[in-house]
Length: 434
Image (cartoon, rainbow, N blue to C red):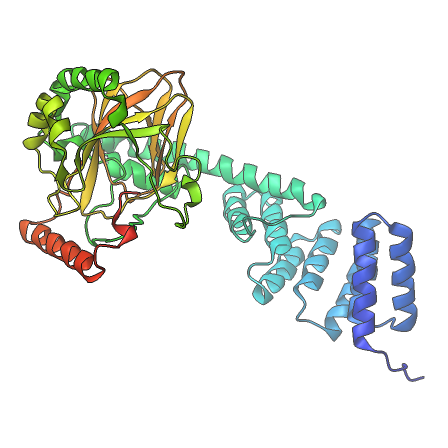
């Protein structure tokens, strides 16, 4: 007897409706729709697969296997059929056949989430937790950041996260043990770059790249915080910090009207993360030099600070550098993540007033300010700051040339910046600090 012709799209629609009903807990409706599809097209591969899923849920692995092998004879390119066949083999405790079925699914779709999760689970059953963790990591990587996963998947995802975390911790401990003899032999040498490398490899920290808003200079190191030994003058500026603080405190007491909002975008400019701080004194500045212009009255008020800064390799680009200012962040204020204009310069922070609970992040490295300790960082790497205390925090900020630029490269950067400014007639919004 010939099988009557069936509209394939109608069968597929009916199966989708039935699956949706089962997922949403409408079991009776799902069974009705599936029975209707079965009566119309009993040998359609999607019908056979849907019936097999019902058998799997009842623990009838043999019946499910028979249905799925029949479905795969008709349509062998659907990875879901192979995953379900793998589940049948799991119930039948035939791990080699299960793995074969899952590999077939992944050959068709290497990013098939269910296949990856089940393969990792099988590897765990086979006593291969390290291999399982690697597959779990692949599974987690295919999930879109904003994906809304069905509730029934959450336990498997939680197992995946736990397995990856435990494996990374075990690998971390193993590496520490293996590398300890070599570290001891080279105890007098720096390991911080290698430690950074291993932290990224283990997922303990994220790798951040420079994202300048204006000029990216390639082939120079992208340190978040630069090593202190790159700057022989750091100790000298730190020694001057008490005098600098005294001048700042006088400014704060007597020159409040000269403090200006650090973030000051004009109307009509997309502000994104700066909406709350734009034109706000919650983050204010008292400039000594501003984009290459010396504020003589301010410098006269802070002569010891000016003298300390004059000795340093500050950026000197007409209309752009040097810049130096006292930065005041009010209590309970957060500076959101942002990046600076160019990695041809670096930024220096000298802490002056630290009321406590003040921190700063560059890339994956978050630090607390410490009295008397300055640092140098690349502000083209995403950074942000917090003052979680109940009083204002104050630091001295200024920019210097990146020490990896040669004298010729500095001259070329200076000339190019001036030329771009000239080309745009001085109206280049992305040349600013924010």
